[in-house]
Image (tube, rainbow, N blue to C red; front, top):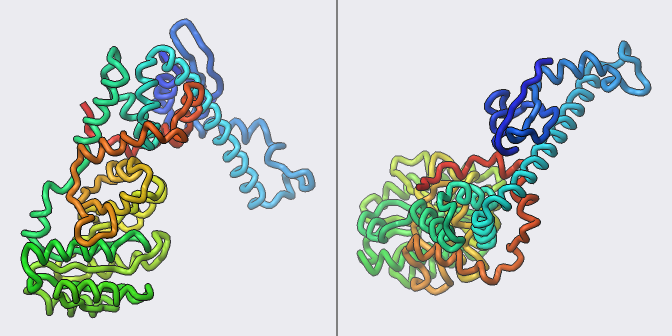
Length: 399
């Protein structure tokens, strides 16, 4: 087995050199502090497996069957179990090293530790908070200055619709998609009211594909009747193509869709239905800002398909913090078209302002005590493998 020696000023730097030299599956054999920093002895996973297989055959045998009588499938299962245990041990060791490194960083850079705590307290994910903290170049500044810098970076990276002239004047076909209960039908009504006020009822058409939810069809018909707009019902891709052909002279067409769980297999069929038309359909996903980061990420990944035109943030009046939604929007590189702040039609639909959204996210920090970590808890929170290996935040542009 060929053992490699890596030295860095910190444990994190040494781990980075291990990954660069041997890859992400390298096996860490030992670590210690030396005069030059932190020394890590490591080898490749292939070398480690070879040594285990050669020198430790009892690990692969069962108490009952001899090695000769052992079925091949059982030996393979034992090997897989062994490798799982080895990877678990490696992740545990890396986590411990990373925690030690964070303890050292807190002592060397207390200002950055304060910035990190403030970002976590807003409700941003640990990986995004860590990325912004590490990229912050204000090493000698104050925590307040670092937070101001982070706000600027978040604002700069948050893509929003400049004004709804792009929607109301340009027109086109828009389909609102997303899970059940995110407010698609109410948002459709708000958008329809804006279109009627700008261009008149004759320029707008409404289409619904929601035949599952009780009263959904009737609800949109009520809105359409109030606005003087005809509502068309379609049940499949054939009906949709026929309807779009009949309504091709309309300036704007808004499509209300059936809400489905992001894990429903019918989501793919819905995406295919909109992709199979001759008329380009811009899909806007409605995101419930009161949902967790993991849930919102799962929703976007499920509904993305060939591409989303953007998103609408809903239920801002019901959420404690919009930081999770902004976190997902930044990761998924979505443009925010509108924000929905209540049930009133059409008043509670606004064009977003990036700076105001970021400021709103940071305003919740003062009373979100459950998200405030102690100094002693930061190394444990930030040292986990999932945070270290999360590369989805690296697309952010920071200076």
